[in-house]
Image 1 (tube, rainbow, N blue to C red):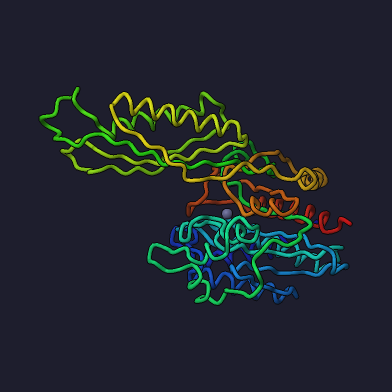
Image 2: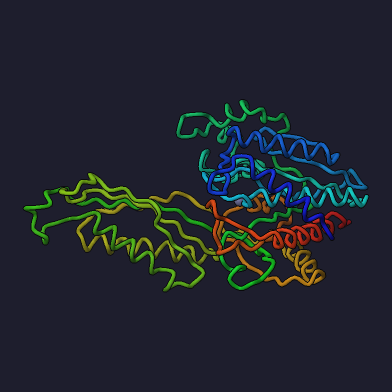
Length: 408
Ligand SMILES: [Zn+2]
């Protein structure tokens, strides 16, 4: 499939003006005014492309191009327009606008597909304003209750449902699982694997599982001066040893495992007081559930040892996570074939970041395509994907999509 690269670039640039930041990124938090503007612009493009638009109770937007058999189960393709605070221009937008470019191309050439194609813009993929992330696709797939999502509040106390109503995107269509013949999502890689190896297309085999823990260590508060070193129970020292040991777990268990301590609070957090209480988070990810279980055990063990060494009490609280999701080999095969057809270099990889495709995969055969991220950067204003990579990845998405949409 040959797409109109300059039309896609123009649309990407126009979309990037909504919520644009001085540093070249976008600030388009879920259900904010700029999210509304992005939706309105998309809706206008959908209308000019002759697609029918429906919006569900979660604000998920579905733009449908009929198939030659309208009764056939549709294939779905898309991503999201919301962003993290001061995020990148390509994250999410690429997946929706590449899908739109493919449909525009099919229209130009009067190409019919057997199955209907539905382009989706999922609500709240990112999640920093209304956690957890992937709420729209999660409710759609039945992983969350709609009313749970409705009651989520942002830090100003605004409810999700009220903000959805305010921007005019609380639709009538029930947000619930329905039959789909397949789901495809193009996204920027957000990591360095493709860019550093100079490979043009990533074929995503699955999404790594993720576990979140909160660890609390309790020692004894005391004066930083008179208390001899051997009499101290310093919660921050215990935490520091644990954090350092958690950093070393991937080296022992396997290089694909990643562990992160990204959040810490110290009490009383004063220069002349021995820390009494420290709480920190642990995030670890791997494609293999057994490794995740072993990593969990290792985190508990090294933290327990660190606490013991300092005479601290320790509590480990699970904060949830997600199990690894392997994508469909048939859809992966369709993407691979398109890469071979086009002669683009490609490799298979697993996503370490969450995506709406994770939930779509609960409903239908699913896979993802990654475009290279310059220097592997994302969730930052200087996130960048080169235009030639945008074009190539859109062509691959188009080829795979049409092949799925023509499956009997
Ligand atoms: Zn994204």
